[in-house]
Length: 309
Image (cartoon, rainbow, N blue to C red; front, side):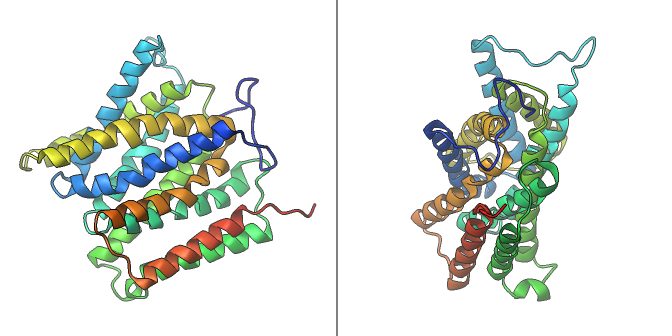
């Protein structure tokens, strides 16, 4: 978000408060637990229907919250507020597209693996911030961390991807990675959103995202069986948690701390996804653990400050 007296622009040298770190931990927990909920729900609910459901649940919850607090969405008529253009773009880039890609990919991937693949988001954010965010230039150390992190992703996917580019597993992993890149682009773009309350911004983009996916979600829903209570509860938790509440916290962090600080959540989020996945009986091979370690090493190197002038 653009700098203002109430939302100062933060750079790498800024000190972050305990509240900033608690918000970051909170969003990492919401996102890290979302993958197992997705895994449960997507086994019974088509991906586009699942995305439609979680978006509308999140949007409606935020609209109710806004009403309680006396907040309103920007006007659409007679003259449309310019922020709706931002909401449409951010809704597609930060919700419709990545939610659909990740949900589709998770049909054939373990939740822990998806969480680890999502660690490409901060690496991409660092590369984009070099161009679009003042004070976040790509140093040699950052570039080395970026390359190391990408090597970890390649190790995670394994050599089979080169021989099976059209296979289901390879396409599923690529879908998750593209979804993570969309998140990185959203984090950069949202930094320039005209001054807007986080709950209003989150609700606006979720409404736009839900409208965009609804025709596809309804079409897929026409041919599905009635989901079990377990799948429906997972969908409800996704909508209220990572989508609704997570959307508000995300916009707060981007507004107050910037996209690079938000990307730090991806140190914690993959670990949470792995622990939750293991608790639900998922198993990770040696290659996955090695790839995870290399990605985290790349992230750590990319986040180190360059002490030289």
